[in-house]
Image 1 (cartoon, helix red, strand yellow):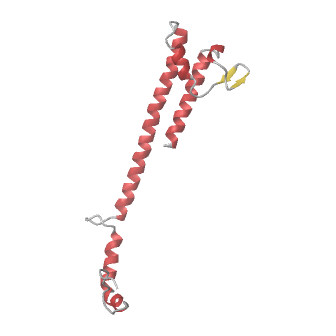
Image 2 (tube, one colour):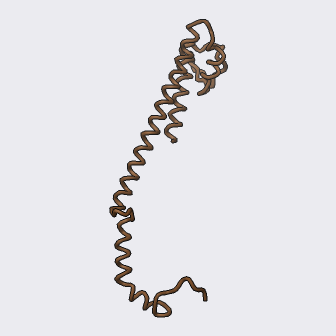
Image 3 (cartoon, one colour):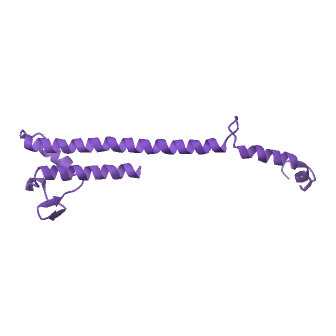
Length: 143
């Protein structure tokens, strides 16, 4: 899940920087977090307010970069969902394989239970002899 969230963050950063680059870092985009020579770094999710504010512009030179940034985010979100689904599927298969190794009996009990029950049945007389009364302990009565 952490990988999916990290991927979503990186996709939003990429979309914001792509839109800012295509709009040539215009002052109308707002104050950047960091400015280095001719390039600026904006907030990771800054593309969304830009899209709301300038997305209905009649000028295709403004609208196209904004819609391309939104497309980058949608594609990245789909990739994140597929990645997280694949990771969960792989984890489930691994857990299923581990469970199958541990349970080789048709009734689903772990295989060590049959060995434990056989041991207890073989040694029940000595365990009863070790009890305080010399026989099986009755747990249903209180003293």
